[in-house]
Image 1: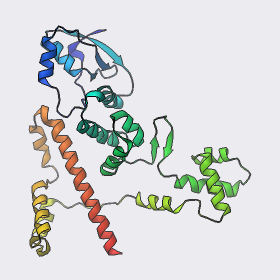
Image 2: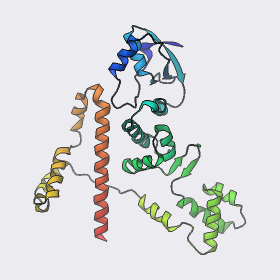
Image 3: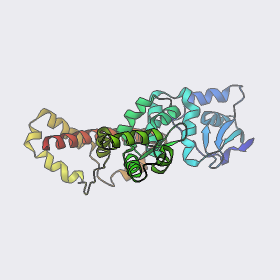
Image 4: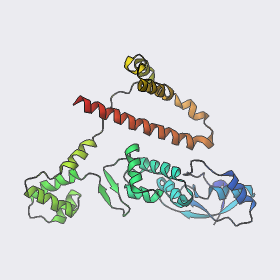
Length: 296
């Protein structure tokens, strides 16, 4: 179907480096027929074919052949990644996975791995860094499964005690767990054990978020740290102070900078900012864990 170029919306591209102008010019100067541009029908966003579209513009075309795809608007980026996997470098696929972990935290590691061409273990590592957690995960088969079935096990245990003759499937359906889990809970109760294994209890406690009531501005915190002798007269402490001074940004300071970032650099800057934030978050978590450990 021929569509006016002017009605097409810019792609939500997974390519951190944007379009290759050299490739666009080579396409435009060739005699090859351009394949249809893949467009999301609901938003008219280009899903695949930005290079071909720009080549068509250079050729002086006013309309291009379009192939429509449907689906939720929030999944346009997912489709764009999937259609470009063959030509996406690892850095772009990892950046795409980090984005999906934020926008689709309920997706399982395997589902995000399938969409981004990464290994499920690699997605798991990124999830721990990004913090893309959800109480439930949607697998590649579309089934919803709890990340930690502790609550479901407790409910199943209560139902088994209240209705000892109920079938495994009936209890599983009501508690939101599998029949195999119900069978295990029943066996644990018969043995006088807690329906939730210790490892699940540990994982459940680890998932409790830390509530922060106040975050100090860098302008308040930095002078305090600079005056601390244990940092000033320590090699690692001085390095830390240099890091903090170079990267400290107060709330609202970044707004003016964002307005001045050229459009072709925005994705790269955004990805680097996220990467730095993730590294700082890992460091903050390590410091908090060490603080908890030494306080015991």
